[in-house]
Length: 257
Image (cartoon, rainbow, N blue to C red; front, top):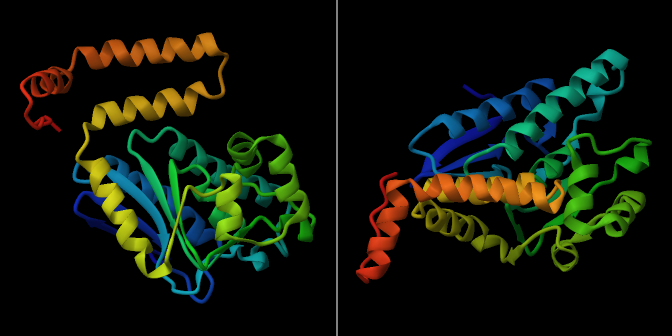
C-alpha cells in the first residue's frame, strides 16, 4: 500500500508514478515508498518492465521537500542518504529493464532516481536540472556517479556546477535523455516501447543489463568475465534453443517466460 505513489501494471509493464501534489516533493514517507514499490514490481512475475513516471501534469518532481532538511542532524542526513543509496543499488541490480517517462519540471532527487534507468523518455516541454549547488548541497541519489558515467566528467561537472534548468532538447543533446516526444504522446510511447521489451526473453534482457551495468565500471578483462558467465548460462536455456530453432525454421519464437 502506498500513499504517495501510484503503483500499477498494464500489459506486463509496471508503473511507479510519483503522486504527492502539488510538486512531488519527497519527504521521508514518500522516499521510503519508492524502493518498496520497485521491489513489488521486481518480484511480480506478471511484470516484465518497470517505468518511473509522475501522476501529476505539471511536475515530474522537484526533489526533496527542503523542510525535511531544515532540522535534520548528521545522523538524519546519513539515514536519508542511506535510503537513497539503497534504492540506487536496487535499481542497478534490477534484472528487469527500467524506463523513465519524464514530463514537466524534473529536478533534484526525483530526477536523480531515473538516471539509473536504462532508457529515459522526455516530453518536449520538460525542463530538467540538478540545482543542489544553489542550496550548498550535492545530489545524494547517486547522481554524482551516474552523471559522470552518462555524460563524461566535464559535462557532469558543468551540469552540477551551473545548477540551471535545461530544456528537453538540451538534455537530449548531451545524452541525459534518450528520446524526446510531444507531451501528449509520452505515456503511449513509453508503454509501447516497454511492451516491445516485455515480448523479448527475460533471461537475455537480464543478462544484457548485468553485462552493461556492472561491466562499465570494471577493467575490460573483468567485464569480459561477466560476459562469458552470462553467455555460457544463456547457452543452456530453453529459450536459446527455441531462438535458434525459430530463426532456422523461419518462424516467430515462443519464449518460455
